[in-house]
Image (cartoon, rainbow, N blue to C red):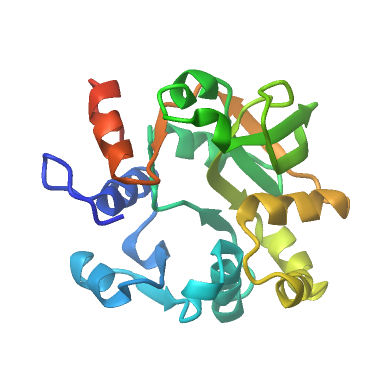
Length: 226
C-alpha cells in the first residue's frame, strides 16, 4: 500500500483521495494496520484513526474488521482494500445503495485477469440471482461459474452491524477460523439467510498482489484511475 507511483503518490494515498472525493473526512477514515504499522502512520502523517491488528501474521481481514467494530460498535461501514486501485465514481454507486450489505462486482473482469500470468490459478466462484449474491469465494479452475469479480469495496449498514453484533456472529466465526477473509465471511452470512446485494458494472480497477502487478498497471492504463 506504500508503493510510490511516478507522481510521488502511494497506492494508499490514492485510495484515501478517492474516498474524500465522496464526502468522507479525515475523522471518518480508519486505517487498520498490522505489518509495519508505524511506517504507515508516518507516511499518512498521523491524520486518521489507526486500529492495529497485533495478530496480523496469524489472522486476516475479518479479524481486523472485528477489531474496529469492537471499538466503534454500530455505525455504517465502508470497507476499502489497500491493495487495489479503482475509479472513484464507484464509491458514489455504493453510497446511494439502500441495501444493508452491498458490494461492488466487476462484470468486465475477465479481460483484466487475462493480463495476469497464470490467471486460471486465481479464479473464484461468484453467482448472482436478481442482484443478490448466492455463491462467492470458492476457488475454481473454470470461468463457467463466474458472473463477475469481487472487487472488495463493500458497505455494511448500521442496522446490519447491530444484528451481527447482537448475534455474536463475528466472534463465533473467528473462534473457528481466525484467517477467514471477506468473501468467505459474506458467504457465511448468505448461508445464514442474510442478503448480500451486488452492484454489478464494468469497473475500472486493478489489483496488486506483487511487484509485477504495478508494472502491468502502468502498461495497461494510459489514463489515471482515481
